[in-house]
Amino acid sequence: MAEVRNKQVVLKDYVSGFPKESDMHIIEGTVILKLPEASSEVLLIKNLYLSCDPYMRILMTQGASSYIPGSASHSMKIRYGVGRVLESGHPDYKKGDLVWGITKWEEYSLVSSDQTLFKIEHTDVPLSYYTGILGMPGMTAYVGFFELCSPKKGEKVFVSAASGAVGQLVGQFAKLAGCYVVGSAGSKEKVDLLKNKLGFDEAFNYKEESDLNAALKRCFPEGIDIYFENVGGKTLDAVLLNMRLHGRISVCGMISQYNLTQPEGVTNLANMIFKRIRMQGFMVSDSYNLYPKFLEFLLPHIREGKVVYVEDIAEGLENGPAALVGLYSGLNFGKQVLLVSRE
Image (cartoon, rainbow, N blue to C red):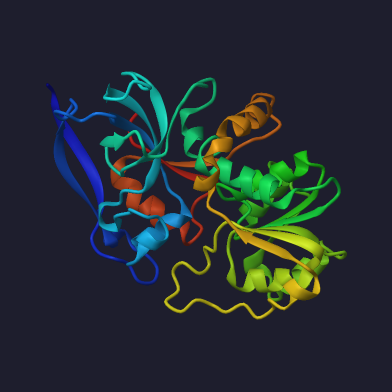
């Protein structure tokens, strides 16, 4: 039984305000590459890629278990990743299988098969895609846009944080559905990406707009039918003024609020009454039963080049804290991924 090094990223303490790299540290232990005795339905996985996602900031806050039951913030447990099965105590998985789902921020993990875990059957696409376009963010975009918003051809769609892991897909899904789509992002380079590579009809840098209401009126003179909400705060307030009658808002995230000790208020909620707006929050974990349907929809588009995906890949577990912290100041360009091992 081989014993190997196992680096882990550990949260030092609960975080208040913007997270820092120093809030996390790397510890180094060892792991025996064999399942513990009497460990049925458990998998020993070698992590290859780990996902950095905005929601991870919530798990650094005391009381995070109310967001994801059973989460343990200090151990950095609730993380999505891609790995290879080294040993399996479950009949549905065998040694050598590739999987994606919930793992830990470390090189090797013991994972219970009753956690969110999917076997990877399609390997003609990059494995890293299963942290993004073919994993949790892709499902989030699919469920939030198609299942919650029921888009119709010709409708006007606005996406905030549009160059991120989820937003870049929502924009492309909107185009596939025959919609007009505008995205907001935080730099000229990201705006150029949205317009020139991802196919958005229009985009703007929210940091350069002193009046978000005016910016939205410029892009949507007839109003917004669908808003895919990723940021909250002032953007949501401005969007509410510009929604059309019977508009739909899919609430995926509110990254502008995660690091504030006092969240911003939203003052224009009365527009939900006047315009009969339907605004719905969701957790993608409630809809994983749709994963086969999602793959059937998306894989052909990826293979035909009709949907593209932009990744920002950092290498080495020791660079995980910097990659994660960079999300909250917009340093990432596309989906932030951490490469743990090339095997």
